Amino acid sequence: MLCPCCGISISVDVKACTCGARFVGRPLDDKPAIVPRLGPSMTAVLLLAVVTTAALVFTKWLAFAAVVVIWSANRALCLSRRDPALYGGRRTALATLTVSVLASLILGTVGAFQIPRYFENRKIRQIAATRARMHHVASLLEEYKRVQGSYPRDAQEINRVLNERLPADYWDKSLKYQGYTTAIADNNANLLTVAGLSLNDFELRSAGPDGVEGTDDDVIMRDGVFLTAAEARKQPMPRIRAR
Image 1: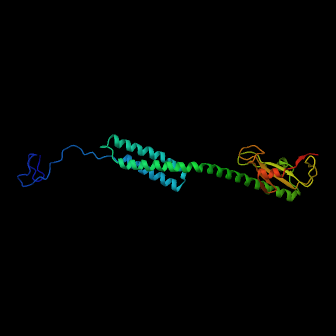
Image 2: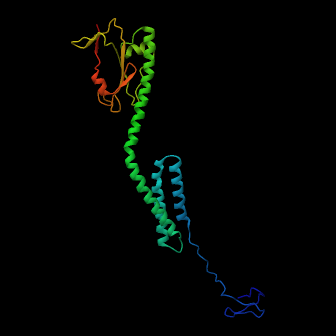
Image 3: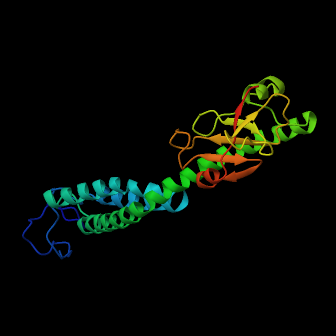
């Protein structure tokens, strides 16, 4: 080899050069040094940070993306076990995998309890949207009564006079309308004759989420007041017949 001080050729086994330079160790060979790769384990850590941040900032449902973190951490762990000289970060990958699995179990348990609440809140929003449409129709009916002195007899009259069809409920089912008056209901047949009659009351009804009219989830408005199906059954509507 060459002396790094004077440049003359010397034996590898000597401890000093004739120029006075002394060697403190054997020279490095030409074999390349292998640095373990940390990319897979660091990728798992980065994914864990991204999923956690997204779940906290946007919506907790994004936490279920932790399955990607688990897959990435498990891959890094397998690579480090298979070839520890080439892939490092085994402890980091193991810690990331452990945290991801525990977090997924906790979130899965919490989510399982919140799923019924989610569907209940969704149903409440749907009913609220249907009630808002009923309020719109009720305002049209009040304006009609203010001008005509009575509510329309049926939905066809609303379409003809107001030039506006009854809107559908949230579930795309047509709202049902009935105008009536309880003042002169027939006590025997519970029938009303509508010719020449001033209708002082009305009912709007939606079949509700199940789409079947007459069930407990019906959305009912009478004279601007919402009733449950049970309350409506206690106050039965008089039927109407034409004269």
